[in-house]
Image (cartoon, rainbow, N blue to C red; front, top):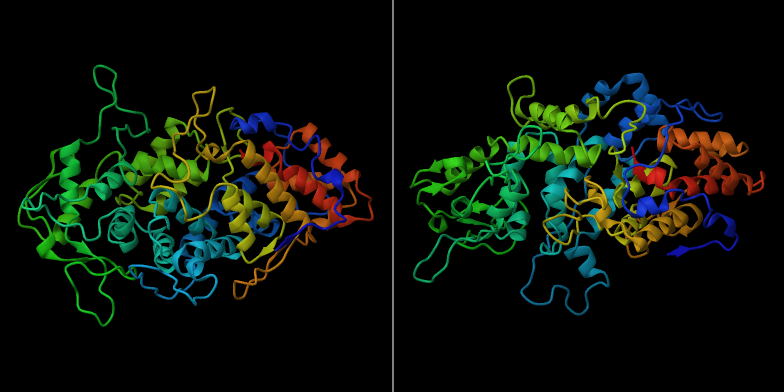
Length: 559
Protein backbone atom coordinates (compact mmCIF):
# COMPACT_ATOMS: atom_id res chain seq x y z
CA UNK A 1 0.00 0.00 0.00
CA UNK A 2 1.23 3.52 -0.80
CA UNK A 3 0.34 6.41 1.46
CA UNK A 4 1.16 10.06 1.05
CA UNK A 5 2.26 11.78 4.27
CA UNK A 6 0.01 14.67 5.16
CA UNK A 7 2.99 16.81 6.11
CA UNK A 8 4.52 16.78 2.61
CA UNK A 9 5.05 20.41 1.61
CA UNK A 10 2.94 21.28 -1.45
CA UNK A 11 5.72 23.52 -2.76
CA UNK A 12 7.80 20.44 -3.66
CA UNK A 13 5.13 18.74 -5.76
CA UNK A 14 6.01 20.81 -8.80
CA UNK A 15 8.65 23.46 -8.96
CA UNK A 16 8.57 25.87 -11.92
CA UNK A 17 12.17 25.04 -12.68
CA UNK A 18 11.80 21.29 -12.33
CA UNK A 19 11.18 20.67 -16.03
CA UNK A 20 13.16 23.33 -17.90
CA UNK A 21 13.07 21.20 -21.05
CA UNK A 22 9.64 19.63 -20.51
CA UNK A 23 8.39 20.33 -24.02
CA UNK A 24 11.59 19.00 -25.53
CA UNK A 25 11.36 15.90 -23.38
CA UNK A 26 7.78 15.35 -24.47
CA UNK A 27 8.97 15.50 -28.07
CA UNK A 28 11.66 12.96 -27.24
CA UNK A 29 14.61 15.33 -27.38
CA UNK A 30 17.95 13.66 -26.93
CA UNK A 31 19.68 16.55 -25.28
CA UNK A 32 18.97 19.88 -23.63
CA UNK A 33 21.77 20.28 -21.12
CA UNK A 34 25.13 21.94 -20.94
CA UNK A 35 28.19 20.67 -19.14
CA UNK A 36 29.30 22.42 -16.01
CA UNK A 37 32.41 20.39 -15.41
CA UNK A 38 33.18 17.85 -12.71
CA UNK A 39 32.11 19.10 -9.30
CA UNK A 40 33.71 18.16 -6.00
CA UNK A 41 30.79 18.87 -3.66
CA UNK A 42 31.20 19.36 0.05
CA UNK A 43 29.72 16.54 2.11
CA UNK A 44 30.33 13.83 -0.48
CA UNK A 45 33.22 12.23 -2.33
CA UNK A 46 34.71 13.77 -5.47
CA UNK A 47 33.24 11.81 -8.38
CA UNK A 48 34.94 11.53 -11.74
CA UNK A 49 32.40 12.43 -14.40
CA UNK A 50 33.50 9.79 -16.89
CA UNK A 51 33.35 7.10 -14.21
CA UNK A 52 29.77 8.09 -13.42
CA UNK A 53 28.89 7.94 -17.14
CA UNK A 54 30.59 4.57 -17.46
CA UNK A 55 28.52 3.17 -14.60
CA UNK A 56 25.31 4.63 -16.04
CA UNK A 57 26.03 2.57 -19.14
CA UNK A 58 27.35 -0.62 -17.53
CA UNK A 59 25.16 -0.97 -14.42
CA UNK A 60 21.67 -0.14 -13.27
CA UNK A 61 23.06 3.05 -11.82
CA UNK A 62 26.12 4.45 -10.06
CA UNK A 63 26.42 4.78 -6.33
CA UNK A 64 29.01 6.96 -4.65
CA UNK A 65 30.76 3.89 -3.23
CA UNK A 66 30.84 2.10 -6.59
CA UNK A 67 32.14 5.20 -8.38
CA UNK A 68 34.98 5.45 -5.88
CA UNK A 69 35.78 1.75 -6.30
CA UNK A 70 35.87 1.92 -10.11
CA UNK A 71 37.96 5.10 -10.00
CA UNK A 72 40.57 3.11 -8.06
CA UNK A 73 40.37 -0.09 -10.11
CA UNK A 74 39.92 1.32 -13.62
CA UNK A 75 37.33 0.50 -16.26
CA UNK A 76 39.08 -2.53 -17.70
CA UNK A 77 39.52 -4.18 -14.31
CA UNK A 78 35.88 -3.53 -13.49
CA UNK A 79 34.81 -5.19 -16.75
CA UNK A 80 37.04 -8.19 -16.10
CA UNK A 81 35.51 -8.63 -12.65
CA UNK A 82 31.98 -8.26 -13.98
CA UNK A 83 32.55 -10.82 -16.73
CA UNK A 84 33.61 -13.29 -14.01
CA UNK A 85 30.72 -12.55 -11.61
CA UNK A 86 28.07 -15.29 -11.52
CA UNK A 87 24.52 -14.47 -12.52
CA UNK A 88 21.91 -13.38 -10.02
CA UNK A 89 18.88 -15.63 -9.67
CA UNK A 90 15.41 -14.60 -10.75
CA UNK A 91 13.97 -17.01 -8.21
CA UNK A 92 12.85 -20.61 -8.02
CA UNK A 93 9.24 -21.29 -8.92
CA UNK A 94 7.19 -24.45 -8.80
CA UNK A 95 6.31 -26.17 -12.04
CA UNK A 96 2.63 -25.53 -12.62
CA UNK A 97 1.27 -27.51 -15.50
CA UNK A 98 -1.22 -25.72 -17.67
CA UNK A 99 -4.57 -27.53 -17.59
CA UNK A 100 -6.75 -27.19 -20.67
CA UNK A 101 -9.44 -25.14 -18.98
CA UNK A 102 -9.27 -22.99 -15.83
CA UNK A 103 -5.74 -22.44 -14.58
CA UNK A 104 -6.78 -21.50 -11.04
CA UNK A 105 -9.88 -23.46 -10.01
CA UNK A 106 -12.25 -22.42 -7.27
CA UNK A 107 -10.55 -22.52 -3.88
CA UNK A 108 -7.11 -21.48 -5.21
CA UNK A 109 -5.14 -18.82 -3.31
CA UNK A 110 -6.24 -15.27 -4.21
CA UNK A 111 -3.07 -14.56 -6.19
CA UNK A 112 -2.83 -17.97 -7.83
CA UNK A 113 -2.89 -16.67 -11.38
CA UNK A 114 -0.44 -13.81 -10.77
CA UNK A 115 2.06 -16.00 -8.93
CA UNK A 116 1.84 -19.09 -11.14
CA UNK A 117 0.99 -17.94 -14.64
CA UNK A 118 2.53 -14.49 -15.17
CA UNK A 119 5.97 -12.87 -15.13
CA UNK A 120 5.10 -10.71 -12.12
CA UNK A 121 7.31 -12.40 -9.52
CA UNK A 122 10.39 -12.75 -11.80
CA UNK A 123 10.01 -9.06 -12.68
CA UNK A 124 9.87 -8.14 -8.99
CA UNK A 125 13.09 -10.12 -8.48
CA UNK A 126 14.58 -8.39 -11.53
CA UNK A 127 14.23 -5.00 -9.82
CA UNK A 128 15.51 -6.27 -6.48
CA UNK A 129 18.56 -7.72 -8.24
CA UNK A 130 19.04 -4.45 -10.12
CA UNK A 131 19.39 -2.65 -6.79
CA UNK A 132 21.61 -5.08 -4.87
CA UNK A 133 23.07 -7.64 -7.28
CA UNK A 134 26.83 -7.74 -7.80
CA UNK A 135 26.46 -8.82 -11.45
CA UNK A 136 25.39 -5.37 -12.61
CA UNK A 137 26.87 -5.54 -16.11
CA UNK A 138 25.52 -9.03 -16.71
CA UNK A 139 22.05 -7.83 -15.69
CA UNK A 140 22.24 -4.82 -18.02
CA UNK A 141 23.32 -6.94 -20.99
CA UNK A 142 20.70 -9.61 -20.24
CA UNK A 143 18.01 -6.92 -20.03
CA UNK A 144 19.09 -5.66 -23.45
CA UNK A 145 19.04 -9.21 -24.83
CA UNK A 146 15.56 -9.74 -23.38
CA UNK A 147 14.37 -6.80 -25.49
CA UNK A 148 15.97 -8.18 -28.65
CA UNK A 149 15.14 -11.87 -28.17
CA UNK A 150 11.67 -11.21 -26.80
CA UNK A 151 9.50 -13.73 -24.98
CA UNK A 152 6.48 -12.38 -23.13
CA UNK A 153 4.00 -13.82 -20.68
CA UNK A 154 1.30 -12.67 -23.05
CA UNK A 155 1.73 -16.10 -24.64
CA UNK A 156 3.92 -18.01 -22.19
CA UNK A 157 1.48 -18.07 -19.27
CA UNK A 158 3.90 -19.60 -16.83
CA UNK A 159 5.87 -18.04 -13.99
CA UNK A 160 8.53 -20.75 -13.92
CA UNK A 161 8.70 -20.80 -17.73
CA UNK A 162 9.27 -17.05 -17.96
CA UNK A 163 11.81 -17.13 -15.13
CA UNK A 164 13.72 -19.99 -16.78
CA UNK A 165 13.87 -18.13 -20.10
CA UNK A 166 15.09 -14.87 -18.59
CA UNK A 167 17.58 -16.79 -16.44
CA UNK A 168 18.90 -18.36 -19.64
CA UNK A 169 19.69 -14.87 -20.97
CA UNK A 170 21.40 -13.94 -17.70
CA UNK A 171 23.50 -17.10 -17.78
CA UNK A 172 24.35 -16.64 -21.48
CA UNK A 173 24.99 -12.88 -21.41
CA UNK A 174 28.77 -13.31 -21.55
CA UNK A 175 28.95 -16.37 -23.78
CA UNK A 176 29.02 -16.31 -27.59
CA UNK A 177 26.11 -15.08 -29.70
CA UNK A 178 26.17 -18.42 -31.51
CA UNK A 179 25.46 -20.07 -28.16
CA UNK A 180 22.61 -17.65 -27.55
CA UNK A 181 21.08 -18.46 -30.95
CA UNK A 182 21.24 -22.16 -30.08
CA UNK A 183 19.85 -21.83 -26.56
CA UNK A 184 17.08 -19.42 -27.50
CA UNK A 185 16.01 -21.56 -30.44
CA UNK A 186 15.68 -24.65 -28.26
CA UNK A 187 14.05 -22.85 -25.34
CA UNK A 188 10.56 -24.28 -24.82
CA UNK A 189 9.37 -20.80 -23.82
CA UNK A 190 10.52 -19.42 -27.17
CA UNK A 191 9.11 -22.52 -28.86
CA UNK A 192 5.71 -21.71 -27.38
CA UNK A 193 5.95 -17.96 -27.95
CA UNK A 194 6.80 -18.17 -31.66
CA UNK A 195 5.19 -21.50 -32.55
CA UNK A 196 8.28 -23.64 -33.15
CA UNK A 197 7.26 -26.23 -30.58
CA UNK A 198 5.27 -29.11 -32.08
CA UNK A 199 5.87 -27.63 -35.54
CA UNK A 200 5.58 -30.57 -37.92
CA UNK A 201 6.79 -31.15 -41.45
CA UNK A 202 4.45 -30.50 -44.35
CA UNK A 203 1.59 -32.94 -44.85
CA UNK A 204 0.24 -32.61 -48.41
CA UNK A 205 -2.66 -34.94 -47.63
CA UNK A 206 -3.87 -32.59 -44.91
CA UNK A 207 -2.82 -29.43 -46.71
CA UNK A 208 -0.51 -28.38 -43.83
CA UNK A 209 2.94 -26.80 -43.99
CA UNK A 210 5.57 -25.80 -41.41
CA UNK A 211 4.80 -22.77 -39.26
CA UNK A 212 6.94 -19.80 -40.40
CA UNK A 213 6.66 -17.65 -37.29
CA UNK A 214 9.96 -18.48 -35.59
CA UNK A 215 11.85 -18.55 -38.89
CA UNK A 216 10.65 -15.03 -39.73
CA UNK A 217 11.39 -13.49 -36.34
CA UNK A 218 14.75 -15.21 -36.04
CA UNK A 219 15.78 -13.65 -39.33
CA UNK A 220 14.13 -10.26 -38.96
CA UNK A 221 14.60 -9.51 -35.25
CA UNK A 222 17.07 -11.87 -33.62
CA UNK A 223 19.93 -11.86 -36.11
CA UNK A 224 20.23 -10.03 -39.44
CA UNK A 225 17.22 -7.79 -40.14
CA UNK A 226 15.31 -7.18 -43.32
CA UNK A 227 17.95 -5.39 -45.42
CA UNK A 228 21.64 -5.92 -46.04
CA UNK A 229 23.99 -3.74 -44.02
CA UNK A 230 27.51 -2.53 -44.35
CA UNK A 231 29.75 -3.11 -41.35
CA UNK A 232 28.99 0.42 -40.12
CA UNK A 233 25.25 -0.27 -40.06
CA UNK A 234 24.46 1.71 -43.21
CA UNK A 235 22.06 0.11 -45.67
CA UNK A 236 23.32 -1.57 -48.83
CA UNK A 237 21.45 -0.27 -51.87
CA UNK A 238 21.10 -1.45 -55.45
CA UNK A 239 21.59 0.47 -58.70
CA UNK A 240 18.23 2.18 -58.16
CA UNK A 241 19.25 3.28 -54.66
CA UNK A 242 16.81 0.82 -53.11
CA UNK A 243 17.68 -1.30 -50.04
CA UNK A 244 18.81 -4.82 -50.83
CA UNK A 245 16.77 -7.44 -48.98
CA UNK A 246 18.64 -9.97 -46.85
CA UNK A 247 16.30 -12.85 -47.73
CA UNK A 248 13.17 -13.80 -49.63
CA UNK A 249 10.28 -16.19 -49.12
CA UNK A 250 12.33 -19.20 -50.23
CA UNK A 251 14.71 -18.59 -47.32
CA UNK A 252 11.80 -18.30 -44.90
CA UNK A 253 10.47 -21.59 -46.27
CA UNK A 254 13.87 -23.21 -45.82
CA UNK A 255 14.26 -22.10 -42.22
CA UNK A 256 10.65 -22.99 -41.39
CA UNK A 257 11.39 -26.54 -42.64
CA UNK A 258 14.58 -26.62 -40.54
CA UNK A 259 12.60 -25.87 -37.40
CA UNK A 260 10.27 -28.86 -37.66
CA UNK A 261 10.16 -31.89 -35.42
CA UNK A 262 10.79 -30.28 -32.01
CA UNK A 263 8.55 -30.72 -29.01
CA UNK A 264 8.52 -29.74 -25.34
CA UNK A 265 10.99 -31.41 -22.96
CA UNK A 266 9.70 -34.68 -21.59
CA UNK A 267 8.41 -34.31 -18.06
CA UNK A 268 10.16 -36.48 -15.46
CA UNK A 269 8.58 -39.91 -15.17
CA UNK A 270 6.63 -39.57 -18.41
CA UNK A 271 7.39 -41.22 -21.75
CA UNK A 272 8.16 -38.95 -24.70
CA UNK A 273 5.29 -38.37 -27.13
CA UNK A 274 5.33 -37.03 -30.69
CA UNK A 275 3.81 -33.87 -29.20
CA UNK A 276 4.81 -33.58 -25.56
CA UNK A 277 2.48 -31.56 -23.33
CA UNK A 278 3.46 -28.06 -22.26
CA UNK A 279 6.58 -28.16 -20.06
CA UNK A 280 9.15 -25.37 -19.91
CA UNK A 281 12.00 -26.84 -17.87
CA UNK A 282 14.92 -27.94 -20.02
CA UNK A 283 15.40 -27.79 -23.80
CA UNK A 284 13.10 -28.88 -26.59
CA UNK A 285 13.54 -32.42 -27.87
CA UNK A 286 13.64 -33.69 -31.45
CA UNK A 287 11.05 -36.10 -32.81
CA UNK A 288 12.64 -37.25 -36.01
CA UNK A 289 9.43 -38.60 -37.54
CA UNK A 290 7.99 -35.05 -37.50
CA UNK A 291 11.06 -33.41 -39.06
CA UNK A 292 11.27 -32.35 -42.70
CA UNK A 293 14.21 -34.24 -44.21
CA UNK A 294 14.14 -32.65 -47.67
CA UNK A 295 16.96 -30.39 -48.91
CA UNK A 296 16.60 -26.78 -47.77
CA UNK A 297 17.58 -23.42 -49.23
CA UNK A 298 19.06 -20.95 -46.72
CA UNK A 299 20.68 -17.54 -46.83
CA UNK A 300 22.65 -16.34 -49.84
CA UNK A 301 22.29 -19.64 -51.68
CA UNK A 302 23.53 -21.90 -48.89
CA UNK A 303 21.76 -25.25 -48.75
CA UNK A 304 21.30 -28.18 -46.40
CA UNK A 305 21.33 -31.68 -47.92
CA UNK A 306 18.40 -34.05 -47.73
CA UNK A 307 18.30 -36.80 -45.15
CA UNK A 308 19.65 -34.92 -42.14
CA UNK A 309 18.33 -35.17 -38.60
CA UNK A 310 16.54 -32.30 -36.89
CA UNK A 311 19.66 -31.57 -34.83
CA UNK A 312 21.93 -31.60 -37.90
CA UNK A 313 19.65 -29.25 -39.81
CA UNK A 314 19.35 -26.90 -36.86
CA UNK A 315 23.12 -26.72 -36.40
CA UNK A 316 23.74 -26.12 -40.09
CA UNK A 317 21.07 -23.45 -40.36
CA UNK A 318 22.27 -21.54 -37.30
CA UNK A 319 25.88 -21.78 -38.47
CA UNK A 320 24.94 -20.16 -41.78
CA UNK A 321 23.01 -17.45 -39.97
CA UNK A 322 25.86 -16.83 -37.53
CA UNK A 323 28.33 -16.21 -40.36
CA UNK A 324 26.14 -13.66 -42.13
CA UNK A 325 27.87 -10.25 -42.29
CA UNK A 326 24.74 -8.46 -41.07
CA UNK A 327 24.86 -10.09 -37.66
CA UNK A 328 27.59 -7.89 -36.17
CA UNK A 329 26.21 -4.49 -37.18
CA UNK A 330 22.57 -5.48 -36.62
CA UNK A 331 23.00 -6.79 -33.08
CA UNK A 332 25.96 -4.57 -32.20
CA UNK A 333 24.12 -1.35 -33.00
CA UNK A 334 21.14 -2.36 -30.88
CA UNK A 335 23.40 -3.14 -27.94
CA UNK A 336 24.97 0.32 -28.32
CA UNK A 337 21.48 1.81 -28.30
CA UNK A 338 20.50 -0.06 -25.15
CA UNK A 339 23.70 0.73 -23.27
CA UNK A 340 25.05 4.07 -24.52
CA UNK A 341 23.31 6.20 -27.15
CA UNK A 342 20.36 5.98 -29.53
CA UNK A 343 22.23 7.40 -32.53
CA UNK A 344 25.75 5.96 -32.66
CA UNK A 345 27.91 7.15 -35.52
CA UNK A 346 28.64 4.73 -38.38
CA UNK A 347 32.27 4.62 -37.22
CA UNK A 348 31.18 3.54 -33.73
CA UNK A 349 29.00 0.79 -35.17
CA UNK A 350 31.84 -0.33 -37.43
CA UNK A 351 34.25 -0.63 -34.50
CA UNK A 352 31.77 -2.73 -32.55
CA UNK A 353 31.05 -4.84 -35.64
CA UNK A 354 34.77 -5.50 -35.96
CA UNK A 355 34.88 -6.71 -32.36
CA UNK A 356 31.91 -8.99 -33.10
CA UNK A 357 33.70 -10.37 -36.16
CA UNK A 358 36.95 -11.01 -34.27
CA UNK A 359 37.59 -10.65 -30.56
CA UNK A 360 41.31 -10.31 -31.19
CA UNK A 361 41.89 -14.04 -30.95
CA UNK A 362 40.02 -15.08 -34.08
CA UNK A 363 36.70 -15.73 -32.31
CA UNK A 364 33.48 -14.42 -33.83
CA UNK A 365 30.47 -13.44 -31.73
CA UNK A 366 32.30 -13.17 -28.38
CA UNK A 367 29.92 -11.04 -26.29
CA UNK A 368 32.44 -9.89 -23.65
CA UNK A 369 34.57 -8.49 -26.49
CA UNK A 370 31.53 -6.77 -27.99
CA UNK A 371 30.47 -5.27 -24.65
CA UNK A 372 34.02 -4.11 -23.94
CA UNK A 373 34.19 -2.47 -27.37
CA UNK A 374 30.87 -0.69 -26.77
CA UNK A 375 31.73 0.64 -23.33
CA UNK A 376 35.34 1.64 -23.96
CA UNK A 377 34.77 3.21 -27.37
CA UNK A 378 35.82 6.89 -27.67
CA UNK A 379 32.20 7.82 -28.37
CA UNK A 380 31.14 6.26 -25.08
CA UNK A 381 33.87 7.75 -22.94
CA UNK A 382 34.69 11.22 -21.67
CA UNK A 383 33.24 13.53 -19.03
CA UNK A 384 30.37 14.47 -21.33
CA UNK A 385 29.24 14.30 -24.95
CA UNK A 386 27.92 17.56 -26.36
CA UNK A 387 26.75 16.56 -29.85
CA UNK A 388 23.01 17.32 -30.28
CA UNK A 389 22.43 13.81 -31.61
CA UNK A 390 24.08 12.11 -28.65
CA UNK A 391 22.32 10.40 -25.75
CA UNK A 392 19.16 8.49 -25.01
CA UNK A 393 15.98 8.87 -23.03
CA UNK A 394 16.04 6.78 -19.87
CA UNK A 395 13.48 4.03 -20.35
CA UNK A 396 11.21 3.46 -17.34
CA UNK A 397 12.99 0.42 -15.88
CA UNK A 398 16.37 2.17 -16.03
CA UNK A 399 14.95 5.43 -14.70
CA UNK A 400 13.49 3.65 -11.67
CA UNK A 401 16.59 1.59 -10.94
CA UNK A 402 19.07 4.42 -11.53
CA UNK A 403 17.34 6.80 -9.15
CA UNK A 404 16.81 4.11 -6.54
CA UNK A 405 20.45 3.03 -6.54
CA UNK A 406 21.84 6.56 -6.47
CA UNK A 407 19.56 7.63 -3.62
CA UNK A 408 20.17 4.54 -1.51
CA UNK A 409 16.59 3.29 -1.78
CA UNK A 410 15.84 -0.02 -0.10
CA UNK A 411 13.26 -2.10 -1.96
CA UNK A 412 12.00 -5.62 -2.41
CA UNK A 413 11.34 -4.68 -6.04
CA UNK A 414 7.54 -4.68 -5.92
CA UNK A 415 7.01 -0.93 -6.10
CA UNK A 416 9.72 -0.46 -8.73
CA UNK A 417 8.18 -3.19 -10.89
CA UNK A 418 4.73 -1.66 -10.57
CA UNK A 419 6.05 1.84 -11.24
CA UNK A 420 7.87 0.71 -14.39
CA UNK A 421 4.66 -0.94 -15.59
CA UNK A 422 2.71 2.25 -14.91
CA UNK A 423 5.29 4.11 -17.02
CA UNK A 424 4.43 1.72 -19.90
CA UNK A 425 7.27 -0.79 -19.46
CA UNK A 426 6.03 -3.88 -17.56
CA UNK A 427 9.28 -5.86 -17.56
CA UNK A 428 9.02 -9.29 -19.25
CA UNK A 429 5.50 -8.43 -20.45
CA UNK A 430 6.06 -6.82 -23.83
CA UNK A 431 2.94 -6.60 -25.93
CA UNK A 432 4.62 -8.27 -28.90
CA UNK A 433 7.84 -9.77 -30.21
CA UNK A 434 8.78 -6.25 -31.36
CA UNK A 435 9.61 -5.24 -27.76
CA UNK A 436 8.28 -2.22 -25.90
CA UNK A 437 9.76 0.00 -28.62
CA UNK A 438 11.47 -0.47 -32.00
CA UNK A 439 15.15 0.45 -32.49
CA UNK A 440 14.27 2.83 -35.34
CA UNK A 441 11.49 4.86 -33.70
CA UNK A 442 11.85 8.34 -35.26
CA UNK A 443 12.36 11.52 -33.27
CA UNK A 444 9.74 13.92 -34.63
CA UNK A 445 11.10 16.83 -36.60
CA UNK A 446 14.59 15.34 -36.98
CA UNK A 447 16.45 12.62 -38.85
CA UNK A 448 17.33 10.95 -35.54
CA UNK A 449 15.80 8.01 -33.73
CA UNK A 450 14.80 7.82 -30.06
CA UNK A 451 13.54 4.28 -29.36
CA UNK A 452 12.45 4.75 -25.71
CA UNK A 453 10.42 7.80 -26.73
CA UNK A 454 7.83 5.32 -27.98
CA UNK A 455 6.83 5.10 -24.31
CA UNK A 456 6.71 8.86 -23.80
CA UNK A 457 3.52 10.88 -24.00
CA UNK A 458 1.72 13.50 -21.95
CA UNK A 459 0.38 10.86 -19.58
CA UNK A 460 3.62 8.99 -19.02
CA UNK A 461 5.55 12.23 -18.40
CA UNK A 462 3.24 12.89 -15.44
CA UNK A 463 3.46 9.25 -14.37
CA UNK A 464 7.24 9.58 -14.24
CA UNK A 465 6.95 12.62 -11.98
CA UNK A 466 4.40 10.88 -9.77
CA UNK A 467 6.70 7.87 -9.43
CA UNK A 468 9.59 10.05 -8.30
CA UNK A 469 7.33 11.95 -5.90
CA UNK A 470 6.07 8.73 -4.30
CA UNK A 471 9.57 7.23 -4.14
CA UNK A 472 10.81 10.24 -2.19
CA UNK A 473 7.80 11.27 -0.11
CA UNK A 474 5.46 8.31 0.33
CA UNK A 475 5.49 5.38 2.71
CA UNK A 476 5.43 2.26 0.54
CA UNK A 477 4.51 -0.64 2.79
CA UNK A 478 5.18 -4.32 2.07
CA UNK A 479 2.67 -6.05 -0.16
CA UNK A 480 1.03 -8.55 2.21
CA UNK A 481 0.29 -10.93 -0.67
CA UNK A 482 4.00 -11.52 -1.32
CA UNK A 483 5.91 -13.66 1.23
CA UNK A 484 9.02 -11.89 2.49
CA UNK A 485 8.05 -8.50 1.07
CA UNK A 486 9.76 -5.58 2.79
CA UNK A 487 8.33 -2.60 0.93
CA UNK A 488 10.28 0.36 -0.41
CA UNK A 489 11.85 3.22 1.49
CA UNK A 490 14.19 6.11 0.71
CA UNK A 491 15.95 7.11 3.95
CA UNK A 492 18.31 9.49 2.06
CA UNK A 493 20.70 9.49 5.01
CA UNK A 494 23.89 9.68 2.96
CA UNK A 495 22.80 12.79 1.09
CA UNK A 496 21.63 14.32 4.34
CA UNK A 497 25.21 15.31 5.16
CA UNK A 498 24.95 17.94 2.41
CA UNK A 499 21.44 19.16 3.24
CA UNK A 500 22.46 22.31 5.09
CA UNK A 501 24.15 23.79 2.01
CA UNK A 502 21.74 23.96 -0.95
CA UNK A 503 24.55 24.57 -3.44
CA UNK A 504 26.62 21.66 -2.16
CA UNK A 505 23.58 19.38 -2.31
CA UNK A 506 22.83 20.45 -5.88
CA UNK A 507 26.45 19.82 -6.85
CA UNK A 508 26.47 16.42 -5.22
CA UNK A 509 23.37 15.32 -7.12
CA UNK A 510 24.81 16.84 -10.27
CA UNK A 511 27.92 14.70 -9.87
CA UNK A 512 26.10 11.46 -9.00
CA UNK A 513 23.04 11.64 -11.24
CA UNK A 514 24.21 13.82 -14.13
CA UNK A 515 28.02 13.51 -14.26
CA UNK A 516 28.38 17.28 -14.07
CA UNK A 517 26.09 18.22 -16.97
CA UNK A 518 23.55 20.21 -14.97
CA UNK A 519 22.96 23.63 -16.51
CA UNK A 520 23.30 26.72 -14.35
CA UNK A 521 19.56 27.58 -14.55
CA UNK A 522 18.71 24.07 -13.43
CA UNK A 523 21.22 24.26 -10.57
CA UNK A 524 19.58 27.48 -9.45
CA UNK A 525 16.16 25.79 -9.57
CA UNK A 526 17.49 23.04 -7.28
CA UNK A 527 18.99 25.59 -4.89
CA UNK A 528 15.73 27.56 -4.81
CA UNK A 529 13.69 24.43 -4.06
CA UNK A 530 16.02 23.40 -1.26
CA UNK A 531 16.14 26.85 0.30
CA UNK A 532 12.32 26.91 0.38
CA UNK A 533 12.54 24.17 3.03
CA UNK A 534 13.71 25.05 6.57
CA UNK A 535 17.34 24.20 7.29
CA UNK A 536 16.15 22.18 10.27
CA UNK A 537 14.37 19.72 7.96
CA UNK A 538 17.30 17.89 6.36
CA UNK A 539 15.17 15.08 4.95
CA UNK A 540 12.73 17.32 3.08
CA UNK A 541 15.60 19.45 1.76
CA UNK A 542 17.16 16.35 0.20
CA UNK A 543 13.76 15.26 -1.09
CA UNK A 544 13.19 18.63 -2.71
CA UNK A 545 16.56 18.56 -4.45
CA UNK A 546 16.19 14.97 -5.63
CA UNK A 547 12.68 15.64 -6.94
CA UNK A 548 13.73 18.62 -9.03
CA UNK A 549 16.69 16.73 -10.47
CA UNK A 550 14.82 13.46 -11.04
CA UNK A 551 11.90 15.06 -12.86
CA UNK A 552 14.07 17.23 -15.08
CA UNK A 553 14.54 16.54 -18.77
CA UNK A 554 18.27 17.12 -18.30
CA UNK A 555 18.44 14.06 -16.05
CA UNK A 556 15.93 11.89 -17.89
CA UNK A 557 17.81 12.33 -21.17
CA UNK A 558 21.06 10.51 -20.44
CA UNK A 559 24.14 11.91 -22.14
